[in-house]
Image 1 (cartoon, rainbow, N blue to C red):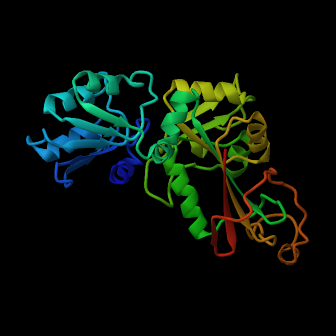
Image 2: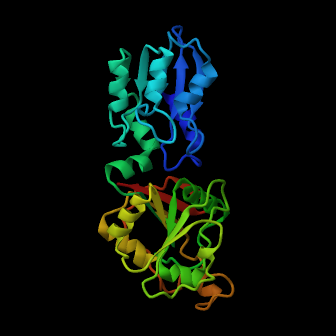
Image 3: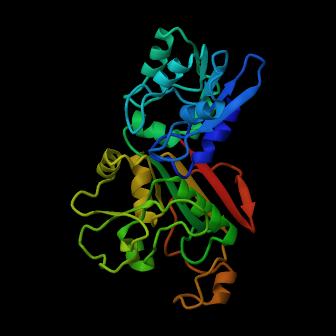
Length: 329
């Protein structure tokens, strides 16, 4: 099953909103004879690719698959039917599919066909791999990742991230289907919100604009990715519900303190990523405000203060003096 999870992760940047799935066939001597994973949204599922590699002689094999085989017609035919047609005698499943279109029906179909099925192998690891997909179907909302950078004295102003931590931020962007900032961030920074320091698809861009103040030539309206603007209804539960109705299973929020604190207070979030740089982090050279010497001595007043959350006692990484923390629900 660990090999199934390794294979599944190969589809990380291409299968959303589908889950990542890996499958292997093991013969009666315990040897892996074929492997497969879900490569791309709309493409063949892991089981299909595995059987294609195996050929015909699979009757005495055990199929291992990280997620319950589907039992319905979607963009591809049911994998459960394919497994039955191949004459496989035993199937080991990492976890049951939370999608209500499957939700145990694939397992039931296999068992009714006389196939021995074992469920729940490395289930915690399987759930972690597809936490975004699972959140969409179990909580009926996208998985919410909050991210910000701050100095040790709580300021969110200035250049805090370094070249290496920017790569990590863009990796997280590529792992989520959408990215959100607030109106002020759009007006002040004019961000593109694309993936440039990592490989992967650009996320769908999301913001709010209750007073129609975002100009039509703002970078978030370029052709690099789709953009969703909420104008009339801008409350967080509604936004999450609407994104879920669009099949968006995850959103990363990189806004300022007002937006971040609003979401933290709503209790509708799943992860917080915080990067903490030295207290003397400064603005870029053309910024107004205290002198560079004031920054270096830590005397610069904090005007944009980061949200307060209780972080783990130790960072999970330290990169060039910047400490990275991850808080999970």
